[in-house]
Length: 308
Image 1 (cartoon, rainbow, N blue to C red):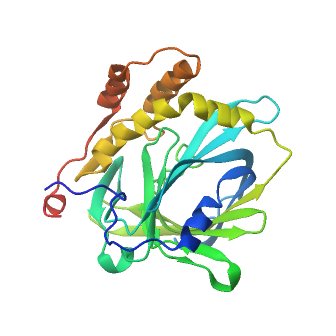
Image 2 (spheres, rainbow, N blue to C red; image 1 turned 120 degrees about the vertical axis):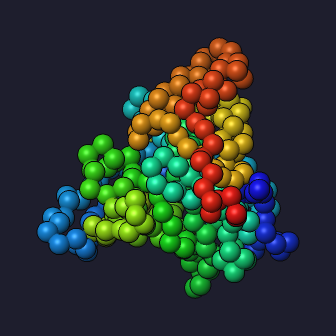
Image 3 (cartoon, rainbow, N blue to C red; image 1 turned 90 degrees about the vertical axis):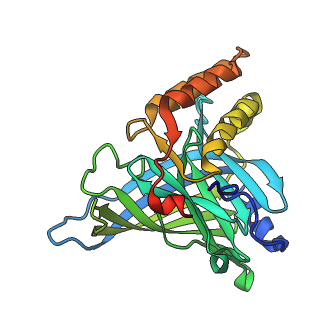
């Protein structure tokens, strides 16, 4: 049975609160970003805490879509010295979404319905890779107590982060709660992560907890024009790419990536096409279709998925 749009169609007819939409849209702009990840509580006997990780960058957050019940924000990294631009992650926000995709392990994401009591009055945030491949979704309500806007997700699964999958084999999934807070001069993204080894028999081994803190501070003296110029030149191309992902993520059972864990086969194919578009070279729809045919396929239908 086909499912409705994944994290796209609202489940109820209520209008989203203006304060919620204002908070989401407040994340747009140019930012200096610090990324920090610290392993905290050791859960597996004998495990030794990994070194803390730190990174930084300059990032423009651009509004791609703004409708009453859906807001799409595209992140674009820029090197202020060279002007080099890299398309980064994307976040889609849908009010009272009926469905969302969920990481099922390996390279598979399944489309599942969201319980009515979870999605009523809530926003589902779905996060996508640099090539618009899926990463994870979470559902929760915005609160605005004492003038501070905060959104906290439910507990969901996500694949290993890019910073670790090339050097870690002791776990294969993150169990995560995400929190976004709008603060003076920017916003923050907190991640309450548990690194988990999920096993074929359905059991799990918890390795360690981790706290992630991404601090977005709005800046006025950084030149983000290259990021906006890149997006203006390639946005129509990336809209076509998103449409092809949606064709698989909007219906059950979801999708499976045939790429290696780093996803670079498809990332390089799509980024090369985007570079061609930026240089005013034609990219045929058939070329985009071929990249997807080579590296993306519908997920296998399981008994549980078939009955959803």
